[in-house]
Amino acid sequence: MSRPRHTKRDANHGDVVDGSRAGGLRTYDTADAPGGLDFIATDGRLMIWVEVKPDDKAPFTEAEARILADNPHTTMVAYCAEDVLKRFERLG
Image (cartoon, rainbow, N blue to C red; front, side, top):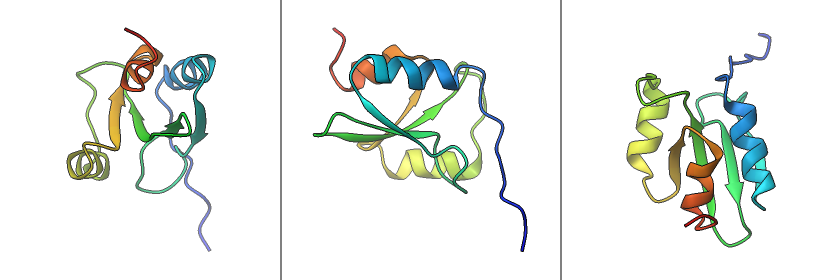
């Protein structure tokens, strides 16, 4: 049996997750799950899969690009916690 694959998180991953929690969202880290996005954020009404990137120049894996393209209403790319909070209408 092979060892679990632990992916390298972007430097801002923790800040985005922590800021989302501070804004009242529940988060579930899925960065180590194969072929998925970085975490799930929910306010109990809406659930969004979030892919964290350090900037808009950072490349996507094939799996990330496919998931984001196929699920535009339930996924997003976040560069900072404010991006996530805006999606949940927690910021103006």
